[in-house]
Image (tube, rainbow, N blue to C red; front, side):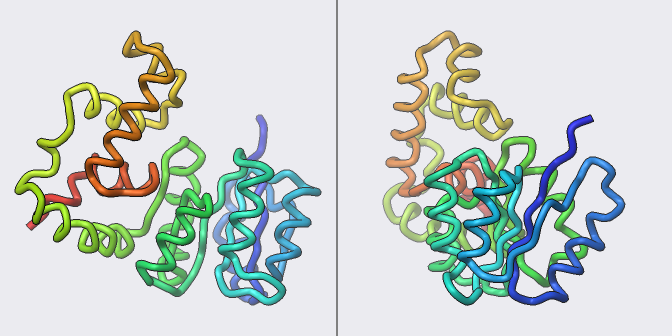
Length: 216
């Protein structure tokens, strides 16, 4: 059985130990390396080719946002889960736009790390509940001022594409299942994001398909 290769990037040794301890019972997981700076994270990612990087945001020699962006540019197949104490909407947006697929608060490390890892490895983004609620609160007022029911803006085909995206399907798989072209799938996805005012697929899935825009 192929083991999942994990790189831990955090400048605090106690956090790196904690991640190792939490994942020690996972027989399908292998910790292949550690980094204590953003530059080391980039070097280790290039050298070790991990499947997943657990990335701190505040590190010396380069912060986690920039390290995430550079790693994602060179190898988009590496899934990056940000692990941080910061629950800032600006920081969340920056990290998602940089290419991260997970955002986990350090206060949730013990209880949610395995869930975050399993989710991103199934091809789906993971945001902590607090982060999801923050994003929903950020986007809801603007959307509701334009239309009382943002979901009504989307066509049935756009909703189908979002649903399949939420299941972790690629554009090619969605195109096959809906009997349309890959280009059409990408057009539906882009139109959905434009209509709802979001800027990444992660925001689209978490704020649209899970109905976070419409909670009272």
